[in-house]
Length: 490
Image (cartoon, rainbow, N blue to C red; front, side, top):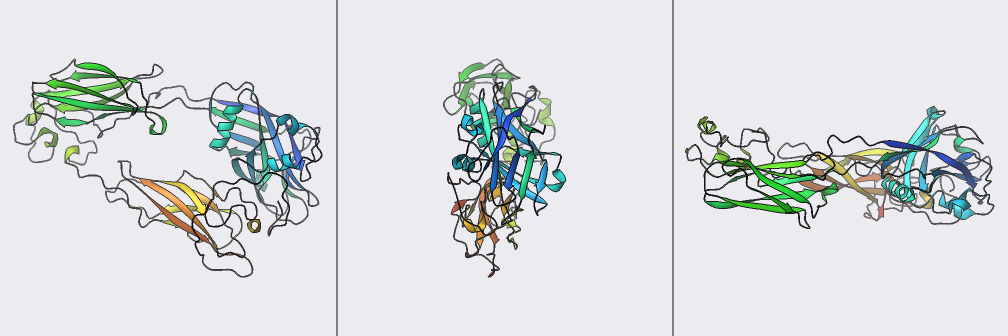
């Protein structure tokens, strides 16, 4: 008898589907805007950063998506690095949406400071690091979900992105990244992967039931889609495929919760195997099974068959009854699933983030990870960072433009920017996380990371003002921004 897991048997509806394909789109045009809002349509240079004086530059790339006809699930922006100039061996650059009219964006302009601002603000699409060793090679920027959503909305038309240098350290002089010079045949591409086919999950429970006939018994099926969303109005086929009631069947529609219930009556002994199945017509059918023991003690040893494997006295007698088959031990722990102690959830009470202290406020990203989560049952724990908040503004003038200050949300570790206000009391990042043991148990918590105050009067610790600002997002004000910052001017 195949092993069954309690209340759920998940089968992928598109297990043998054709893998998602990728489409590549080369930039149809490109260019730059200066700090004063100047752009020349015929100049195809793409330099982001600071020029020989103090002028700043941001660049754009436009892609023609006229041939895009399928939904996009993921993508990357591929940019060939032509040069890295300035005092640093690496520079970070961010990619943003472009809300400006594309016809105006690509035309010659003289005072469009609003377009310049637009190329480095708004909806954040991604971030990457350019190293000196990358010169002449291609840098890939994984696109955030907001970018994928905007690409799907732009299908059949044009789509533009802006590129902005994260930090300029020099008060005067050239510092930045160049992706192309004039009409160089460099690589500027969007590589877009089709959205995967829908994945459904079908569960049937109770997985094992003991019922003394004559009686009625019912099983409940539930159909869900992506992220557990219920699928209403789907047709679920129920049938008893073996046992004394073979042939009993029904086709029932799921309700608004994606659920359908099948019930039947038996007045004879034996074990029924019940199957629920669903097919959307595009792949292999989804199936889940359950067992119903219509005799609670088929070997007459005074032990219910659902607990007969290890609870006092199974010696092979029940195996002589072909319709019976014994008990279910899905996790192979020597105990029937029905005799197993309830699952204990993970313990997040002793969790922390390592490292918990970033001594040097160097404005760079540093990886931190959650540790200290335990599970009383010894189950494997899956960790996920759900959000990061901080007690200092993301767009503080004293700290430079941080867009964002935390990346990697949704994984088991994140990177946070090591920076804090010179006149503050130290920055505290609040890392919200959750843990799942894969058996229905979960816990969540928050751990903190301290970045002591930098400047001429440093601190060794931080004063926590609370999770006031979302570290993973940033929306710069539209228009012209002036002013010197501690480590460069935006």
